[in-house]
Image (cartoon, helix red, strand yellow):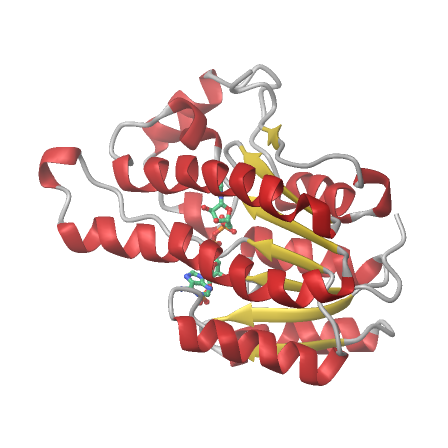
Length: 246
Ligand code: NAP
């Protein structure tokens, strides 16, 4: 894959899957915009990319805040002049059983995981449409496909993201913008590090390949969907889950 000359925004690139996606996009030549709620958290990543001969900047943005998203798009265009790739990766969990789920937990998850992707897609699509080129990749989840006890808010947000993916794919197709989702299975990051051993064991029992995924597994799929070679794929949700759901 060669993304020389392309400009990519990755939301939530301070750690985990987003950081790995950002590193991989930069490795294949993309100019990288690393977005997180605290710009200091992506400073090392940006420096690492520059040390390796790449080009990158940090932008502070909370994806659930429209003014921050506008600033993110403006800052990217001011620095790099265009936006070719958007990875809507920022996400949180606020798990609890339905009967105990607080309204705040529902709202926080929907605002970041779903509204955040809507705000970023809408703002970035305007820039992409002018150039008649774009790749938008939304990070959904295997539990959005299966459902999961204690994750009504998270599963609903990720399932909603797939509806957003399909609608935006149809709407933006004539502008030569593809919109796809990557649905990770159980990936070893900070998000899953705090899960109780029993939950992890139960998950492992459902994975035919017998291993948890790595951020690199997800980055490989994202790089493909961001590439020229994936130009005729749109509205698709690509499962990367070791066979956990098929
Ligand atoms: P993680 O390690 O917790 O990282 C989440 C990232 O999102 C961080 O960089 C965080 O940055 C950022 N973020 C959170 N809220 C944000 C906001 N309002 N605005 C901007 N950035 C925000 O999680 P991960 O495991 O890498 O997950 C990445 C994505 O993959 C998420 O969408 C997650 O739902 C999805 N996913 C993960 C798994 C898994 O097993 N790990 C499975 C399926 C799907 P700050 O907190 O520093 O701002």
